[in-house]
Image (cartoon, rainbow, N blue to C red; front, side, top):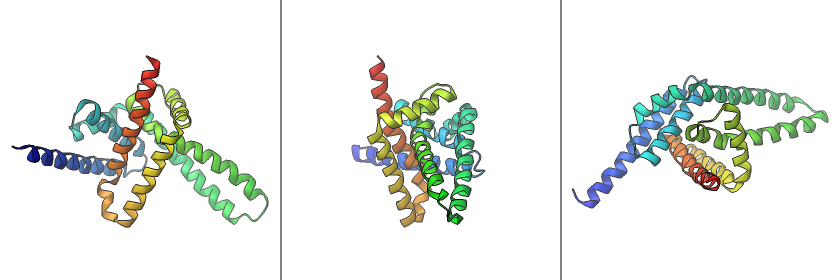
Amino acid sequence: MNILDSKFYGVVEKFANLLILNALWLICSLPILTIGPATSAMLCVVRQWKLHQDTSSVRNFFYYFKENFKYSFIIGILYIGYSILLFFNLYYLNQDQTGLKMMMLVPLIVVSLLLLCIAAYIFPVLSHYQLSLKKTIQNSFAMSIAYFPTTILLFGVFLLLFLAVKAIPMFILIAFSVAGFIQYHLCQKVFAKIDQSLQ
């Protein structure tokens, strides 16, 4: 096997792993309530790829799905609950023609932005560190503020992938695992800086 064959095989293997990981995430997120554990497991698999060169996607996915189920399930439920609450609040405010509309809308936007900032880091933090749920949330919020350019970059990546899926619906077959890969890659750089500063 020459170098070109080896590189081609490597590209095909990575693409296949992304397809498999994306399928696992979609299947395990179908109940909606398990979207948290599925996301945590996906990022743990990506972590294994990057740090340990372990490409056992299926085995690792289900291992980490169970391993991090408790905290990731709670986080997922909290975000689902807030999303439902936000939907009904926005629906109500859309019907409201009084001066209270802006007074209620501003706090909703602020809280939503804060939760989005935390969401950019919370599952990568959960997959990378062994922390309590409280510390995971606190550290995710602190990182989102301290490394704000990375936070903006993460949002930009998610937006581009969303637009890609909208333009090419078939891209959904790989979009979520690509998002997870890029998300962990960017967050890993943040983790490396933090770990280095603590030494």
